[in-house]
Amino acid sequence: MIDLLAYIGGLFAMISFFPQILKALVTKSTDDISWMMLATTLISVVAYEFYAIALGLLPVVIMNAIFFVTVVIMMILKYRFDSLRPKLAFQNVAGE
Image 1 (cartoon, rainbow, N blue to C red):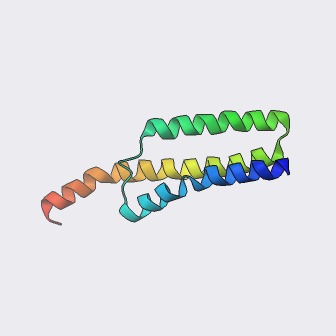
Image 2 (cartoon, one colour):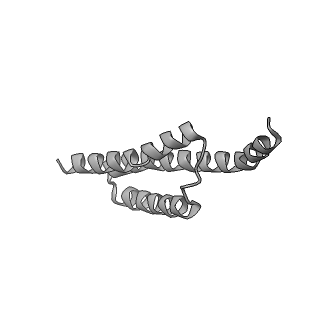
């Protein structure tokens, strides 16, 4: 039963990023997402992962690893769409 709580907590942590990932994919914009939020989330996930590994908390390790992937996906989208922004702005001004 206690392990189930870890899986539920990890599932909701992971799900919390899905709306932003979907919005970023649809709008091709991550302007409303800060690098600071992504970095602090990633640091907390990594620290928590080491803690869970040290204590042998397998459900936390599994769910946190999946959450880590979710955060990294959001960081990749942020990098990708932020780097596209100047090109898109130039194309709109040039009328292309």
